[in-house]
Each structure stands twice: as structure tokens, then as C-alpha cells.
Length: 174
Image (cartoon, rainbow, N blue to C red; front, side):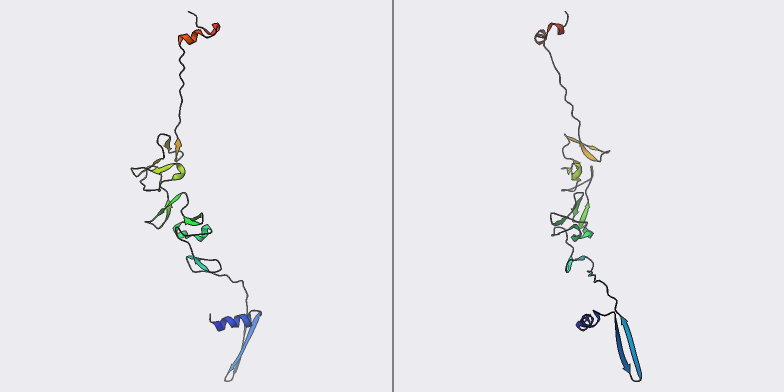
């Protein structure tokens, strides 16, 4: 819209419900009535931008953000501590240039790709394993590393000398 058009709208049409345009050519007189329909202005930005007093690019991985929707959703990002990153159930894949689901037990991995919320880590053999195999085992039912049950066995040995110190009623009959 040209500056002339914008000024015409502001100065002439802004406070009217209709506008009549009259004119003539050779032997014809014409008159057009334009109805002015007012609506609230809605600012829209091009794709990959959002509006906050101006059109702003969605933040990419590692960039600053205020809210999750400020982050680029094509990269499946969340706003965490004012930085766009992956949620706890996802990790950043530089191959796919987006956050992808974390890897589960027994699957191949590298770095921090394993599901940390179920006590998995990437082992030296590049497979997702329980963080401590002495304390945890993989439960298919729970789909998580769960604590191993621990039993404590207490054995009490009573020597004959200790037995003689017992009250008479508790001594064995010889």
C-alpha cells in the first residue's frame, strides 16, 4: 500500500461507514458508494516468524527464548532456562538438525542419547545400559532400570560358654 493510499485511509475513511466517489467522463456521470467495513487489525508474520511488536524469527537450538513457542517447532524445541533446547525425553541430533527421542535399553548410543529419566547411560560398548548394574537391573515391565532387591542374612552363633550364661529355664537339658 502506497503512502498516498495509507493517508487516504487514515484521513478520509477512518471515521466513516461509507464513502461516495463521484466522477464523469464525456457524457456520463458516475457515482460509486464504498461501504467501509472496520475490523481489528491482525498482524501476521511470514512463516518461521512470530509477532511481538514486530516480526521476529523463531529461536533455533541454543538461542535465547522467553516462552516455548518462541522456539522453532520444526526442531521440536522447548524453552528451558531461557535457552531453546531439547526436553528431558529428547536429545539434539545434529544429523537431523532437531530434537529426537532418547534411546532405550540395549539400543546403540553415543554421548547423552540414552533415556536418563529411567536411569540409563551410554556404556563404553556404546549401548544403553543401567547406570549401575550392581544396584539396578532392566525391567521390561517397568521399561526402566529398577533397584535390585537386597537381602541381609544375619547368622547368630551361640557358643557353649554364652549358652551357660542363660537363665536356667532357657538352658538345654543334658
